[in-house]
Length: 492
Ligand SMILES: *Cc1c(COP(=O)(O)O)cnc(C)c1O
Image 1 (cartoon, rainbow, N blue to C red):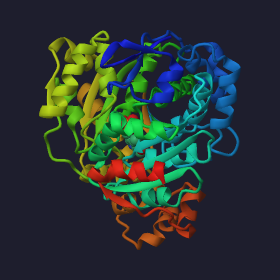
Image 2: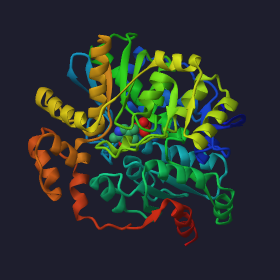
Image 3: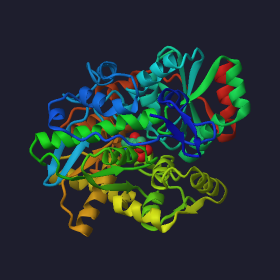
Image 4: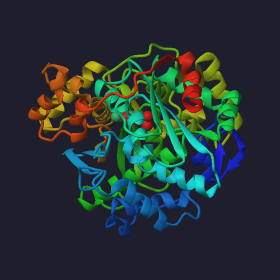
């Protein structure tokens, strides 16, 4: 299967090149030229998560073989890495509403589901393409990708990783997780700015010919661990299949029955993976796209106008504080039937005017597939409180946004189709907000313990231990200084 750049369909590469390079040279996102059909079958019901991963991913990875992929899945999802019997357990909250819990991995957020797998995909891609240079992985994070990428790539041969995070845009625990990272090939730098500034900075370093030459002379090249890399999106398709199969196994639905999914969304990577699962044949009826006060996607799905000219809100769900959702580009590429000239026009309008409008034909299909809604901070906290009081479920703020929008959807449409609500982070990662929701204000050093005494789930020990680790990285730059930071890192 070939992968095409969203900005020039004539640029067609193998999956190995797509994964090794992350972003196409023209700034486009590599997208598979077709979507294979893989029905969820009886036989998959008794498979382990790793076996399901191999079955779902294999058609996208020509010639890699199921045995190789099962081996990778063992490394990514096996052993003691997850504090649950399966990496992505499904947990019923009430009739029709099921949490797909994706935060049982090493960094307590759903990013682990892809970033534990990506290094294996990338290292094999480097080997298969005969690449001898070092892959310098530049990563912009809104909080969770950074730590998950550092953990995934820490001391992986042939790679080095630099993470940029928005200095005031992440929670205390998220920052500490990154600045205390161990490993000889890692670097972490704060940026004065928000996530969009950080992501835009990284993307422009990627496509800057001088920067590419600079790294080339040092026997290196840029790659990405952001969801612009197809190797991030692919492993995320797996848990939609797995969640569905587990619903069938538990008797909540019958094989073949439809479900909905509800996804707390920022960069549109997670919900794009759900769309791929649907197109592969998984019976997903509606994709519910939940945003926080940064409601650019809500407006887009409801009106066809994408407009980033609006106030940027710093919220309790920082991993969704995004106004430029990169992966929407892949979605529109699919819906426009791979019209790269059209995508190129939209993206240059977005870059120069900050907005674009898609034709009614496309926004109509968007609305058939998606429902979109948003939830502000006040309601996020109220939702955390009510879910805890009514169902004994402690939600992190991102998951609470999803639950609130799911409730709106159900009230508005009276659609009671069983719904997988994607639970993207451990509540312990956002202790401050969760405690505030429950009306308990305490010293930040005691938060994890106080929360643990209230909740009925144990706190992940890696978060407890953060306090005792030394901070290794304290560099902060302006967004104009990001290229310099990359040069110092690679050159020094
Ligand atoms: C990254 C993240 C999101 C948003 O996911 P996208 O793929 O960027 O849409 C939501 N919740 C949490 C906790 C995250 O870390």
